[in-house]
Every structure is written in C-alpha cells, then in structure tokens.
Amino acid sequence: ALTGHKNWPEQWPEAQPRAEYDVVIVGAGGHGLGAAYYLAKEHGITNVAVIEKGWLGGGNTGRNTTIIRSNYLYDESAKLYDHALDLWENLSTELNYNVMYSKRGVMMLAHNVHDVQSFQRHIHANRLNGVDNRWLTPAEAKKFCPPLNIAPDARYPVMGAALQQRAGTARHDAVAWGYARAAAKRGVDIIQNCPVIAIRRGPDGSVEGVDTAKGFIKAKKVAVSAAGHTSVVMESAGVRMPLESYPLQALVSEPVKPVFPCVVMSNTVHAYISQSDKGELVIGSGTDQYTSYSQRGGLPLIEHTVAAICEVFPIFTRMRMLRKWGGIVDVTPDRSAILGKTPVKGLYVNCGWGTGGFKATPGAAHTLAWTVAKDEPHPINAPFTLERFTTGRLIDEAAAAAVAH
Ligand SMILES: Cc1cc2nc3c(=O)[nH]c(=O)nc-3n(C[C@H](O)[C@H](O)[C@H](O)COP(=O)(O)OP(=O)(O)OC[C@H]3O[C@@H](n4cnc5c(N)ncnc54)[C@H](O)[C@@H]3O)c2cc1C
Ligand SMILES: CSCC(=O)[O-]
Image (cartoon, rainbow, N blue to C red; front, side, top):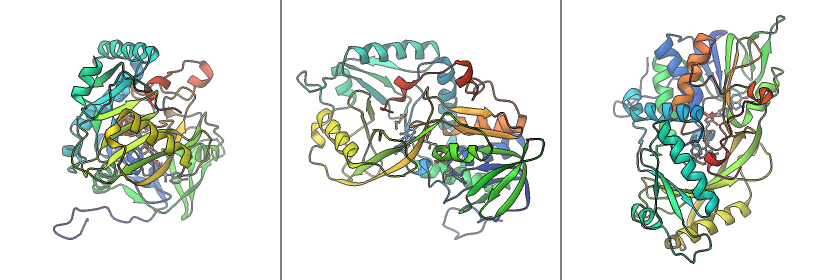
C-alpha cells in the first residue's frame, strides 16, 4: 500500500527485484514507465518490472526542453505523433497528476526560400492528415510572438512561419512521476539504481531475462527503452542497432515575467526557445557533432546557440543564463524511431527518438505496451521497424526534426 504524508502526493514504493516477472522493461524514462502503465491498465499485465540504472526520469525525460508537436511530414509520422498529442490532451486526468500540458503553439521560422518551400510542403501534408498547421506572414508571426525580430536587414530575416497552434509544452518531470505512480498503483515494480548489465538469451535464442547489478531477473519478455544507451544494451543480446548517440544540450536563463507566449524553433539558425511557467527562457539547439555517451557537451555549441537567439530575439541580449546541461540522444539514419519487435524472440525495442521523443511519450508508451502484450505492433507503430534499414523503406524526417543532428 502507498503511504506518505497526508498532504504530500503519494509516490511509488522503492521496489527490490523479484526472481521473475512476465515483462521486464529496461529504462525508467517516460517511455518505459508509460509502457508499464499501459501494460497494466490496458492489457491487464501487472507482473512487470521497470529496471532503471539511475533514478527514474533522470535520463532524457528529465532533461529535455519539453516541446510537444506533431507537424511531421510523412503519413506514418503524423499518425504516431498525433496519437501522442491525442493522449497528451487528457494525460493529467488519466494519471491524476498535473503534467501541465500547455497548447501555447509551436512556430517554425522560415529564413530562406528552402525553408519556405519545406514548411509549406509540411503544412499541405499535415492538412491531408488532419494535423493543424498553418502559414503565417512575418507580420502575423510577430503578432503571435511579439519578441520576434522581423527586421528585413536581420542576418537571417524571417520570411514567414509554420504555426501548429495545438502544439506546446508540458512539465517533463511530472510525466515520469505521474506514470511511475500510476504504474506502481497497478502493481508494477519500479527498481531504481539497478543497471541492466546484459540481456540473457536461452539455448533456443529467445530471451530468458536480464542480468543486473542486483542479480539475474527471469522474464520471457524484455522491452528495451534505454534511449542513448539502447545500442549498448541491445548489443548484449547480439542485436546491432543503426543508432548513433550524441550529446544534446539545453540551457535556461534567469526567471523573468511572462514575455514569451509560445515556442519558436528555427532549423536555419539552429536554435529554439520557450518560457517555462517559472519564467526561465528554455533554450536549445542542435547536437554536438561527435558521438558520445556523455551527458554534457561543448561550450562552442552553447555560444552559437545564444548568438542565434540574440539575433532572432534582440530583446533577450542582456539576459543572464543560469545553467546548461545535456542528455544522450539516440539518432537513426532517417531520424525516425524504431518501435517494435526484434529478430530475438521475446525482445522488443523502443529507441531512435533522437532529439524529439519527449513529444511522443504517451504514444510511444501506448504502442510499445500494445506490441509487448500482443507480440505484434499496433498499426500506428508497425512502419517503425528495425528492418526498414535493410529494406530501404525509410521514414526520413530530418527536416521535421527541426534541429541540426
Ligand atoms: C537536452 C535535450 C532536449 C530535448 N528536447 C526535446 C523536446 O523539446 N521535445 C521532444 O520531443 N524531445 C526532446 N528531447 C528528446 C527526448 O528527451 C527523448 O527523446 C525522450 O525523452 C526519450 O524518452 P525515453 O523515456 O526513451 O528516454 P529516457 O528518459 O532517457 O529513459 C531511458 C532510461 O534508460 C535508462 N538506462 C539506460 N541504460 C540502462 C541500463 N543498462 N539499465 C537500466 N536502465 C538504463 C536511463 O538511465 C534512462 O533513465 C530532448 C533531449 C535532450 C537531451
Ligand atoms: C529538441 S527539438 C524539440 C522538438 O523536436 O520539437
């Protein structure tokens, strides 16, 4: 039973591993915790353990810049990210935890003819898929976001913008905490500070369980949702993943009064910005350009980012930055996720979300749970196979990824 201070939100018990579970999920990020929740809630599978090497939510789920949108180009992507957006709408009620989902709008800036053509192609494709996205002139973009500099003599003048009004932000920690508490209430064990050292396979090649720092845990089904470390974990099962892991950094300013009403992103100047409910400017850009499992990146990238932000938003030139940090993003060749079965019986994988998997969290979790429960992908995640990198049926979303990586 969950206990705690009467005025304090209930948390989750500190579970210790049992000898065997029906399902083990590697990684207590939003995706892994959410998958455990939906396994219990929608499929009645509660003998589940989520194994986390650090603390739950301490990976990219707790380190991202919280942008949520679904304005991707391909039909498959629109279905996956809009499925997530549909689940975001009611997630606070579903989890009884305020995830602070805010539909403040996400505006993608165009600074050259290529940007204009690319974003207008996205807008037309989105409309065919029922995804809200519309074109704004520079003046309309400035009306929507007053701090925006639309001077024609700017280094990268704004030539227009694509606005997804339904898009926005959420409180990333609360997503992990909400899923963790709701999953634990349904009987899921969340085991923290317990790295999975290897996935163990039996004589017939199928999954037998996982070797962890706290011993072997038997399970016929193992789902890996380890983000930047997926390639390492999957290699222990003899599965080579088409992933590269990079540091992706973010930074926040000192808090100020509400001044920035939406989210603005720019592929060309490689920066994006929003303002948290506490008042900090939340800023990010592209990945460092070297592969690494480090959760920190280089200062040159931060210098480039703040220069880009000051160019597009001169009002922020004298803001002081409080802190910067990084996470490890797992990037596929086509910048789309891998979510489904693997060549190993009983082994499932959810990865490759790169710089953009926070927005997908409820949709990725929901379809991963479906895939594990039914041993078949949901129609929505069916196209996101590992095999597409041998068949060539790629889902190239590099443009929609909206940051350089
Ligand atoms: C700085 C930054 C900004 C970002 N901004 C955005 C954004 O604005 N919008 C957006 O959509 N996406 C964004 N992303 C990407 C997004 O954060 C991720 O794609 C998403 O959170 C991945 O969720 P997850 O649950 O798979 O990963 P994580 O939250 O990283 O969870 C994976 C977990 O697996 C654990 N793990 C790893 N190896 C092992 C092991 N061997 N044993 C046990 N546990 C293990 C890790 O400790 C981690 O807790 C950003 C990422 C970063 C780093
Ligand atoms: C880190 S980029 C954020 C996004 O993908 O919208």
